[in-house]
View 1 (cartoon, rainbow, N blue to C red):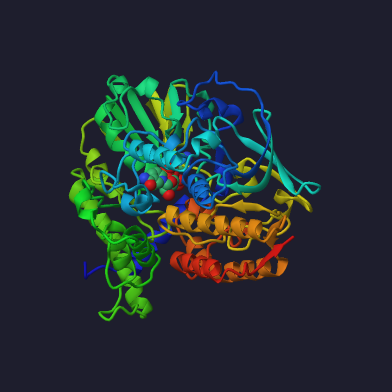
View 2 (spheres, rainbow, N blue to C red):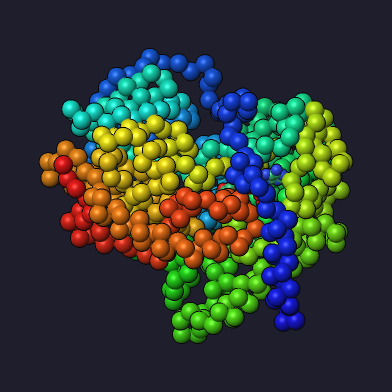
Length: 587
Ligand code: NDP
């Protein structure tokens, strides 16, 4: 690889980016609503479920029962709070792991650090990257351990939150007619939770069977998360989307479908997965705190920091070692040219892996990604590339343009129609577009609506609280630390929220909110720190990180704490330890 022409490589990146830029940016997508509302139906829930509306008071209302909501509930229980309500749209806890049950769904961060509370529950995952069902059932274990099931209102969506100043309570209304007065509200509505569809002309006319990956229709495909989809044995299947989801699901579709057409717009960067069983014995007898140490180590390394050892040692940490090399003494390499070359070489190794795995040279060429590392989240799989060696799998490379249109019979690319029986949409989720819209919440505080206050983007202290909305907390990553392992950030945030709620109660205050001054300082720090990252993303091939290549006003405000995810976590830890509630106003 020493003879690589680095300038030519960057030239190719720029060309490929140019090919993908489109004037409609984010507007190229639409939610699973209105004309596609039927596709949003929950395949796992009882459609006839009914119950009487509730009118009640509680101390803390948690919106969302994924990992963030579970962690919030667990930490509050640890602090002795009994009066908790959890409102959850699905029919069970699990969040992402409730909805995403497509074949091949598994975590992409090692489970020993992705799954929270392993030490508290005395649990060791079966594999490094276990399947969705194992993670979903672990969510249930947390709920049981912290007695959260009795708190849950499933198949229920919180819709509006109105502050009642006379009682210092949030009045929360749901789609089932409930009215819950809550002293504190913790909104844990998730990241990447609203599925989106591409507005491809004619998509609504497709007469075959279609579904989004987060609503997998096993009634049609048969089989389960391990594959074995006998319902597809005589079907021609098309899949749109080759991101993290597409990469996990395509090997299973390839194994089950009579024919599979993969409609590719941008090839994914696919690294080695190297999954394998975990031996519980190797974790026995470890010192208490091992899980935290392992997590901290991973977040430090993947956030670009230094640690003398690499405790997880997976493809994520290998990527960082490649892209951000260090000198023998651990100091970061400072030479910009050396860093540039290291990053380009790492991406070249990904392309060489494609050549090594895919037999047909033209298909291999089409599967090679041409963009900087971190323009998109890397994917990890050991069977994805080889799937394209199967005779029943055809890669339809749209050369950055995407599917041209749909007819009632199938997809059209470059004027050629591909008739399909079934269309799988692995086209992703909304990400940091508009907090209130994504959370599905209409939030009105004592001084007005959050949607108005945040019309240009979020304004927070530590990404978790906002002035003018007392006793309201958000679990989010905008203006917070963006760790590769989101659950790590979530765990520290929930500990902080539980700490604030406990202190507020202890001090006998009715309300707690950030001061304008502290909020302004935090927002300024975020915006200043975000400028470099945004400039990089604006040079990237489009994707959800870069608002599809469009300059969005809210992008800077939606950005993350620049010193890094571990620095953010350490900041929260210090803030809790100090115990003075700095930046908050008690009322
Ligand atoms: P992504 O947004 O990453 O991928 C969407 C895919 O759809 C892209 O390949 C995109 O192409 C393609 N696409 C969109 N519109 C069109 C079109 N008109 N024609 C052709 N292709 C189109 O969504 P994912 O669900 O894959 O992943 C989202 C995120 O969720 C991940 O980045 C990850 O953070 C998380 N995730 C994590 C998993 C895990 O931990 N195991 C598994 C799955 C998801 P293009 O690239 O050109 O835009």
